[in-house]
Length: 246
Image (cartoon, rainbow, N blue to C red; front, side, top):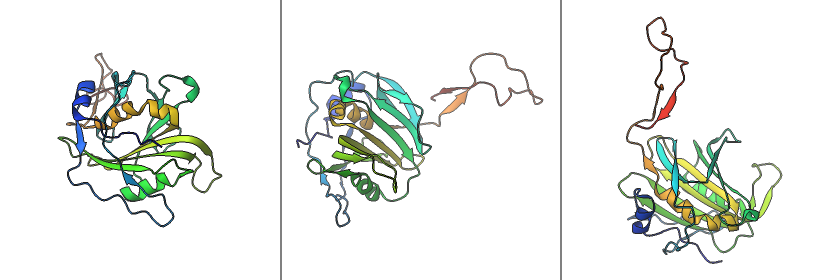
């Protein structure tokens, strides 16, 4: 299997979205030690972004999670999470061929275990792996965020632990564990048909490399208008509110 790049040049990404750049960590830790029987993980090589970017660079959506701001391509669709452990769920449509099927990106937090433990757990969900799952640590320039990424392709078990396996062949996973955020470690995992994920690889790069720590907490402000006063002369707590980034 040809390995895809997870390290586009800083200059290209700055031209794409104008956000903070990301460069390899100065002191990269050793690849995690895998328990006996687990798939070994190697460090990703460096390469360039391909010239075919499609609509992946038309970033027009902004979201917020656990003190972080993220950006999405114009046609990635936020959805209501279908699992209470998910903070965010996003549908990834195919870029060129709808027959390839959709991928799904989810963001979670509060998961126990170390970074290495969770990377090993994600990789263990795959059998008949194409090549060797690859991993890399990246430090976002000018921020405290350290992102550990992993990519794997093979037959994916989408079933819950202890339940009957739900096998999905020809599936690719992108994973990212984000350390250094103001509200703890954030886990990002995107899974979908191999062809769709290959087409959307640049968008994943833009997403991960433009994670930003919010300078001020996100607050909810009431929209303009008149509200009935409470006994204390202030708007009632159930008055409509709308989000606004400070």
